[in-house]
Image (cartoon, rainbow, N blue to C red):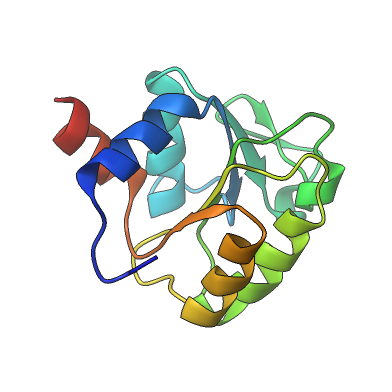
Length: 142
């Protein structure tokens, strides 16, 4: 897939089909972007699961925090990544080890690693990078 631009239908279909989103790099700090995006996704009806080893066992926005994707007890449709771009490959490896695999991996603004994306796409997982669902959702769904 060309990650320089995305067909709006691809993003609309993805956001319209996923129900459970793991947010890797979730923060309990209301000033952090991940906190605001989590709140937005929850308000839109998604089940959001925060992933942050520093907060594991606690709660963010009323949701139990897990240290790793592999610790989440239920299936995940999408992984939303709030980590540095150089850590995306490791998150993709962890997501690909899940059974079942998520439908999609979403790299937040400035989170892009084309080589890691190729690996996920070769495994049948959709990858969106350098975008934010809290920006794309209102643009595509009004």
